[in-house]
Length: 502
Image (cartoon, rainbow, N blue to C red; front, side, top):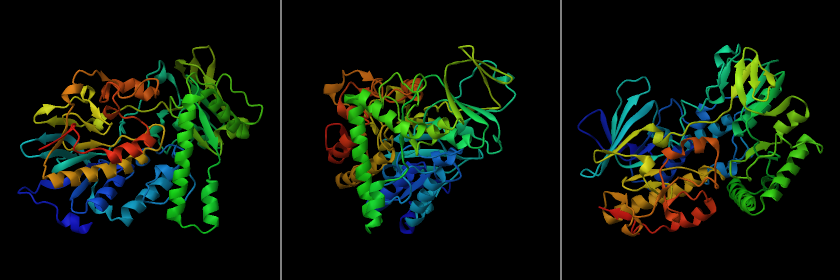
């Protein structure tokens, strides 16, 4: 790694640094991408630009009580780094894992913290991206130039979560805080807490707060599907017990979880009623055999149209059984000094209100993009397999999966980018540009993903901002199907008609 950095290209100006590749973001996507680039393309110079003061991305931003993964770490972790803890992990455990990856591979040398990107401009004449930055304190930053841009900053706004404006919020005497903006100074011991929302964040916050709070109420507009299971892998335990090495354990358990996820995805489409019955049976193991699902735990959509909220060891439902947590399905009419007045007429008393209301989408980190002096309008730009974009050269965006672990795509696209860079070198090409073939020019631009495929509120709110599919053509969309892509992406013909080199 040191050799790569020492071969960083020199510029005539001390404020300009040139690299073969700039990776944007030092979260789980950026760290994994840097590993693949360093391992598979050791001749390439690169830098990782991170706006925050530390690695982790989401796991640095989210600090609310109980924050944990909602995917198993055997698939959410990298394929190259064995996971040895419980399948569902805390933020601290995930950060420790990421720090180990950085330390073991000397990636820290490549990361520039406190670097906020303000503009990315491509020049076809120079075959270079110019990346303008400022420091986190607002002072001018280094300008970077790169042959290839690898966007790994995710797809939501880390600074501005989705926070509805309800009438009367100013009248409420207690704190109202969004989970993404959690303040560690808040003491909820012995307090009545209302958590607004019922997704993965709410399912994490609620059991974590329930043991200290007087009572926690989950207030939801509509029910969510929950998937309860013990936070352990019987297969991993058995393999370790018989002396199997951790690399093999990781590989086998990863395949096992992928097989289970694939079956769940298929069954959710083919037999959604039976899947719901199976989910209810697992919930009853923690909530009790007489647990009532109506009206608060019977969603109006089929499983996996929105992300399943995973509940390790059924902790939220155990708290419901113990009387520490209750659920209310209603809408907010207004806040009062002592709580929330619901549309039904019911009043929820509260000392503290936590909004687990989701986040806002932020395409490409909200960075201004230009190609040869013309602004890029992502909402009018066709996507190639949800990773590259028509008319935007030498750039790839890591956008993971909704129904499988995000990081599965980090590994897949890491392989793809390295293969693409090597292919460009073999062709002595300075630019690769995705172009829509003339035969497809009349196809309609359609939303990033179909409403009946995946339709959570955060996606529907800002779907118009995302790049577009080209009709229903499989190559011109993000399929959200890891099992299909695990075969298709490695076999992409880099000399296909959509790849134009110069």
